[in-house]
Image (cartoon, rainbow, N blue to C red; front, top):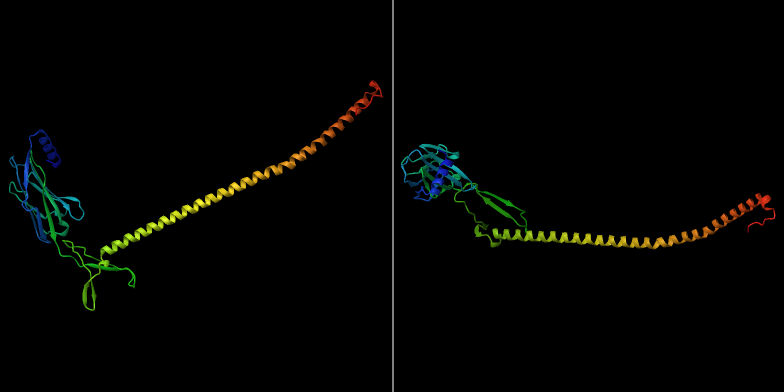
Length: 290
């Protein structure tokens, strides 16, 4: 039966009130082992039902470095199986009521929290049993480096770290002068570096704000100057239009009488000509129209 089905049945039994909480006991919740040795994870449980094929025991592992959960070992119906890096390394106990496992060849990556859960028919563990396991390993050869220019007044950064080692190694810096070791000044520690980084970040932020403010001010000045020039040009154009229109008006007025005179003369000649043609009818003594 799969773990999901067992959990579902246990949940239904718990809701119906027919389930019994199984008690898991962890005698040693914290274990330290040396790299390469075996680790024994002791766990016992008490079930109200007979131990049979429905027994399900699972061990999981929360890795210390990556904080990811990985399966370790599963016992289901008398069958055993290990997973991942734990294959061929886990030996379970065959004693009823005992969920102990032994893991061989422990490595630094095996440091973390191990949890065990037990299901037996309608009996379920209220909470998993947990063991904090630490694989002790000496630190590897440290990698040290120097960053910065070795000049008077310049800041240097000295870094040193080890790829492996449990517990994690810590470092302290000393100055060797004339064969005598002395602790580094307080300003040369991590606190000084952090303070310098904070001050530098604040200065950069101030510079950025000042630059943005200057750009905005210049843009506003340009817009204001452009608006002023546009207004002046508009006023000049409005002032120039009446001055140019006045001579045109005068020319038009001056030209209109001349056209009227021409029209009158032409009309006069036409009337005289008409009178002349009708002279025989009206008489040749008909006066001309002045």
